[in-house]
Image (cartoon, rainbow, N blue to C red; front, side, top):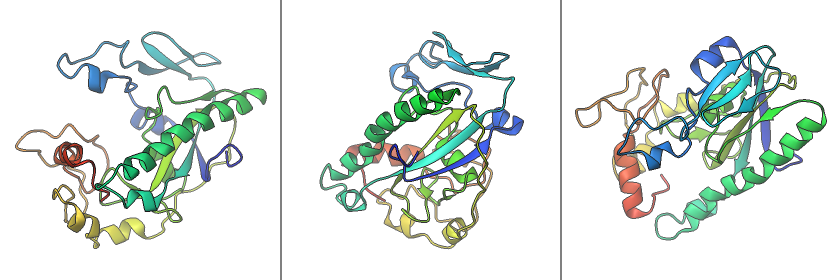
Length: 252
């Protein structure tokens, strides 16, 4: 992975718990943008992830299939971005350009590592699009020890590169020795530090000092911008994304 462009990499075996709780039910596809007014979208727009008793995974018009009769492993890796360019937000497009570099780079890294793993006699199941992995990457990057979550629910802190780090994860049937989660103190520090919340121009990041399992309501309605099942500080995703679009991002 390092040879092909990743900065760091870690691994874990996909257990029954991971299959049941972390593998997405559906691929994102283009459903989020193309079917906002016609929900739910068809399976051809957001294919379903399923496990079947096959030796090699495959894809159809409506599903993405993983083999159920052999061990699978997730390997997560980091692709750092430019901190200096991120500091240009929102007065220029430099931050957006820096943010997009992770996707252009992973579009080159993925096919190279897939070809390498295939040459060894194994399979590697990648992203359908640069943003669409089978497992949420903050979860997989945390499990393999690349870093920890943050007060801003959409951010991930890496001990070496901080939060300006792209994270991705691919699935393979090639046996990999698991790496362990880390406690670098960053998540615990987030409990008392509110600097990102203080800097947020939209007051979208909460200032609570204890995370919670319960997602608070959003403008009196159920908040569907977040996935439940984790103990977290819950950012107001609606205000965050709406106003970021209006001002051209914020960098917080």
